[in-house]
Image (cartoon, rainbow, N blue to C red; front, side, top):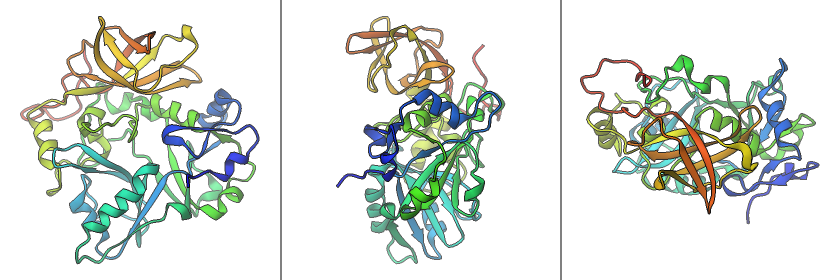
Amino acid sequence: MSYLSPLLNRSGAVAAGGLDAGVAAHYGDPNREQRLLAGYLGKPPSAVVDLSHRGVVTVSGPDRLSWLNTLSSQELKNLSPRVSTELLILTVQGRIEYDARVLDDGETTWLIVETAEAAPLAQWLTSMKFMLRVEIADVSPDWAVVGSVAEVPEWSDRTVWQDPWPHISAGGYSYAAVPETEHPGLERSWFEYLIPAAELVAAVGQRPLAGAWAADALRVAAWRPRRGAETDEKTIPHELDLIRTAVHLNKGCYKGQETVARVHNLGRPPRRLVFLQLDGSLHTLPAVGSEVLVDERVVGTVTSSAQHYEMGPIALALIKRSVDPEAVLIVNDDGEQYPANQEIIVATDAGQVLGRQTGFLRAPR
């Protein structure tokens, strides 16, 4: 049976689809909800987002961190309690299978994932435990996730994951065309609170709610990739700038490490994530999966689109690395065409760092 959040009973709630099926897309006024979520005109953020459809997997036992360290892209052996990070589970070819938000409370490691990932991730982890002292559980039915741009003082005793994006984690590396100090992700802090499902309605109380559309618009504006949106069966972390938060380049061996190291040191990612400022004259948004064209040649695909409360229609797309960064792109949605100016996220010269001067990739001149 498909999940339906009890907060869909709120007045004006309109159910979302796709990755956010089971929670509200909005509650009647998406732009106002986005302003309340982000904070505006000097007012602090006040709204929270129902993400109770998210999957939650727990790993307990004394070997949990050292074991997850051997399986994932992230250095976890010495992860301190309440410190948030991100990990990837990759294929042998270095392609992204799972992307998990990670938090350890000193006794249990919490993995927050997209809805469809929880059961298969728990099953795969169980198949890999062998004789180690770990216990894996899919606890998604028992826990709800609630998102916020700011810390919620009333929930200070709750378990909370804070998105490390866009800061470059220890062992990470920026593939962005701008330095960290100029990254638009700095304008979006993000917290995901774990609340017992039975307490969700009471915990949220009468505080304002923003729908999934509002949260996704802020995510897109922050250039933050999402599993299942910006990823497909071929995606490697370099294409999405996920080396900055989800990969430790100096840790021990794990599945997919060879590809990660080879592309980082000697190669270049075949595609690059790009931010699109869309022509707003059509008053609509292109569908996810719409083709991105240059001179009638398909060069990529729209992965996310949103209506931002300040910038208007925006999108993320995966395009071929070789596309001219100055080119005006056309997004083609079943014959409806949207001119789009591109802002470079992953630099066109990303990769091949062996022998380079260390530091951030330089922005194009």
